[in-house]
Image (cartoon, rainbow, N blue to C red; front, side, top):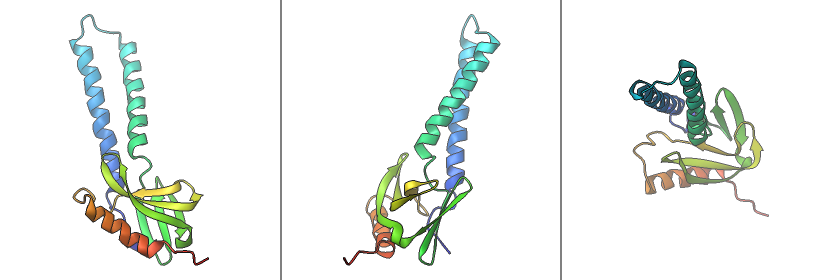
Length: 154
């Protein structure tokens, strides 16, 4: 099995969630201590819970769809996200291209038929994705496309 994605993808997603959550909660606590008169503790608890839910939803919408791990195993791709595995044969791959995932570029594998939990596309960050931009990412996508996408000779 050859690892195609960055091994730290899941850690990056969780780290992003924790950092944004802590920053948002610090703003709420700062507002509590600098506001006069102070809100009741129940109001603050409600605000903290509501803000945590909003941050979780927002961050998850930005990076939650990115695969934790993508492996090439013979003539199939094995993609993992949140403990769920999907096996995709190369015949099911329609295209490979570069897309924006959150604020960085990523590789998108477009599928002919959807797979659970990914749907019709698998998005992942390749190794060293933080230092790869533009043409280098396009070259990685072109290489993967030449290996995965089979042209129909119909």
